[in-house]
Amino acid sequence: MVRAVLLVLAFALPAWGWEITVAFTNDLHAYAERLVALGPILAEADLLLDAGDTWEDTHRATGEADARRTLQAMAEVGYHAMVLGNHETYLGPRLLGELVASAPFPVLATNLRSTLPTQRWVLREVRGVRVLLLGVLWDLALVWPGWELRDPLESVREALAEAPAHDAFILLAHLDFPRARALAAALPECDLIVLGHNHRFLEEPVWEGNVPIVQAGHRGEAVGVVRLTNTGLASYTLVRRPAAAALLLPAPAG
Amino acid sequence: MELAALVWALGDVPLAMAGGGALALGPQPWLLLPLGPLQLFVGSGEPRVGGRIHVLRGPWFAWADLPPPRVALGRAIGPAWLALVRGADALTFAWELMASSYLSLFGTVGDEARCGVRLKRAQLWAAALIRQGGLSLWCGLYFSF
View: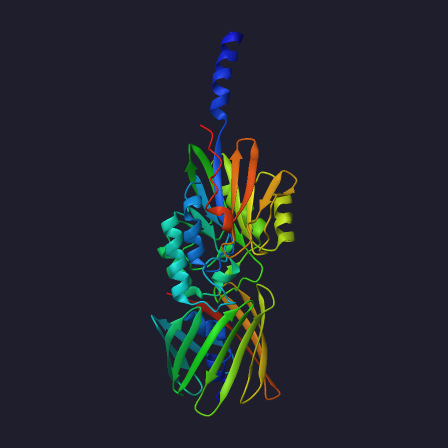
């Protein structure tokens, strides 16, 4: 009997092991052309995410056409989800509402109560792995009339309590670095925080306890590629734009 | 400019940019109804009825009011909403600066200086406006259809 159980376990255990590849951008600031150039690499990932400040660039005083062009480029590359950043709020509720509604992927804003068609959480199955995605924003976000921006940690905890069972939990966060570290410390169950806002080119993940925080610069100058397994972060690579075209993603495990 | 018209036209730049609806209670109550690209203003002061048409709805915002005739161009930048408003006889710079999710400061510079503070919690708001040495208190709610 014991031998039979051990035999079953021996065969069953490898089935629990999983690995997925996550590619991400953050702070694109409406540089749609650069996104197109990075497209072939991004498209190879199992999960393609964006951490906000994507559709507007105040420095260049971009307009509605730039926002729509960037969204179109994201759709063509095949993004799976993004979180609103503070610059998305500068677009105003009417234009932003239209953009979110027309996005062919979910736009997350777990801690924002508004009339925008954003989502609090998304469950996406990738290679048989159920990945829960949440997204929060905070610093410099404009709170328009009728909106309410709620505490990120409190909102994440509420969403986690309501969300379905999952194998991995990725948080898209668009906020200041110290605030992200505090979130990571309070959410040890989080497998990965993809961070936007501070425009840092992180060559290595920043660890807060067991939670890795990653960020890939800004304005399409780099993308981040993460291999996540059932035991956590297996690898993280910051791929800078000039070299991007020559690089291939790590081969996914079977 | 009449107080209600002032608060409608210059005292809530975020509402003007958002194109939403609002009910304001105070010295001269007013109601703002959103009708697609239009906003219909009904107030107890002058003008009793006004209209606003939105030409640009972000990230550049432009709108025109009638009566009195007035055009505005604005942009939301960082924690601020900024607008240049051209009336029949004056150019005014209107601004609102978010100090936190629930608190903002607002004001105008131009034909006459005014400033105020606004508290917001979801749909509800309250504001104090200082103008010509006088203080007026307002409260209300935002809504959309």
